[in-house]
Length: 380
Ligand SMILES: *Cc1c(COP(=O)(O)O)cnc(C)c1O
Image 1 (cartoon, protein in one colour):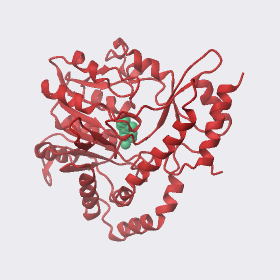
Image 2 (spheres, helix red, strand yellow; image 1 turned 30 degrees about the vertical axis):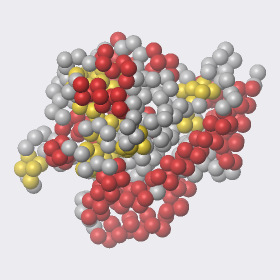
Image 3 (cartoon, helix red, strand yellow; image 1 turned 120 degrees about the horizontal axis):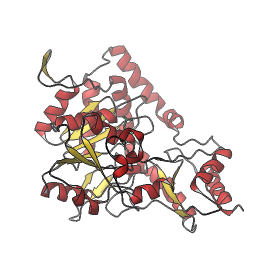
Image 4 (cartoon, protein in one colour; image 1 turned 135 degrees about the vertical axis):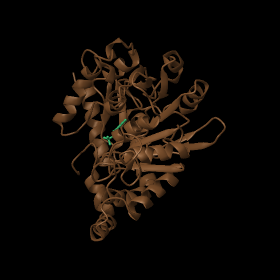
């Protein structure tokens, strides 16, 4: 059996090695390390894939979020509504710009922002909503967009974990997540569904005016070389990474299908267990399984942390995403993080556990993981 990893990027690389190596060497030979045709081609291909008019490549997913909020001209003290049950980057970018994160609770099935709680969180200071498509499952975008429109708010999708996910609206039309809100952000961190071999990120929009602002902010607020209109930052995607990503983009749907199949296999094995709730899949979205995250029923004899430790002893990695929700992070003490009452978020953070899922997982590996999960549940 091949060694178990949360993500197996090396086996995946071996399958596309020839193409990737040639593309990387071509960039080295060209000496065009920043910008250029390779970068522009990738940006164009991903924009088409995601069904958006514009794509602004940038250095990482955190920058994508930051640049997006800067482009909306949000002012210190403005409120942005986000889930607390997310990776810290979503909220950190807001706090860095002196915006006030207003946390709403998540749905206990989708793990994403509970759209039914959104309106109560809106105040005259609210400027934007940042839904996160957590673990590869889309937030309820149709409802979120309706509410945003009624209240004249911007929506920035944090699509770092769900690239390639299809969202079906009630009229039957489809869009890719990241292409639904006014702006979408993604990350090419190596373990993401479209992962680079280093850092990277991108911002999506179909709004021409916003696209110009986003581009400008990511290059020092520059309108033409050495003329700077607004305070921006420096956030670029390296050309070498763009060359790699352009190849991997061709396989993205295949990769997501492989993840979905691995999830089906786990689902079938865990279906009968009363200790485990398998990931929910709403009819409106095609879950892309960035993570395979189960809810583990804690009992006196067995706990989520116990399972985590037991699997580690057997050489099986598993992860807790995330053990401390954002509103309970020390970072947000001064912003009143702990004042938010988020019972579902707190409940989930004590029960979720993510098992290995990636494009290279085989049945032998999954059988080993599954039997050890049951060994733990059936022990004592
Ligand atoms: C990975 C991730 C980010 C940040 O991306 P980086 O490229 O690591 O900066 C933001 N939000 C979510 C939900 C993520 O999973």
